[in-house]
Amino acid sequence: MPPLSKCTGVTTVKTDDVTESERVFTVIAAIPPGGVASYGDVAKLAGCHNRARWVGRLLSQLPSGSKLPWWRVVNSQGRITCPNSALAREKLKLEGVPVNDSRIDMRVYRWRPDQ
Image 1 (spheres, rainbow, N blue to C red):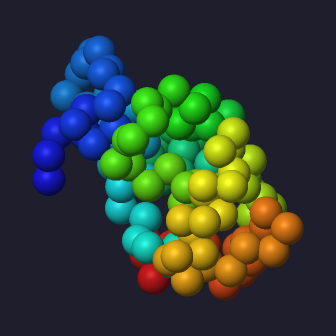
Image 2 (cartoon, rainbow, N blue to C red):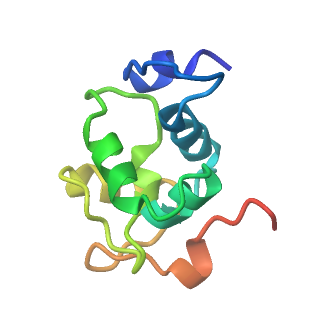
């Protein structure tokens, strides 16, 4: 796997072996096509409990053209809340995830890495 900065386009400052941002990007990169995770799911899996809004802010800073599958991250109700929701809907539909009124059925499509 290439360094995360190549996938995300975001440069982070390392304070230890792996930054919080890198852990978040690693979790998002692991979400498979056809699956979604909430901002809170990503934060928890990255060890950044109770930092769902920070995950959203981090994703909002990705440069256009980032290879990170940002469109697979939605809010806890399954709503697409990113600024480029039309592109996110299109990408999710191409992956086989039905989107109804900018909403995904989290009971069906939520990614659980332990299952």
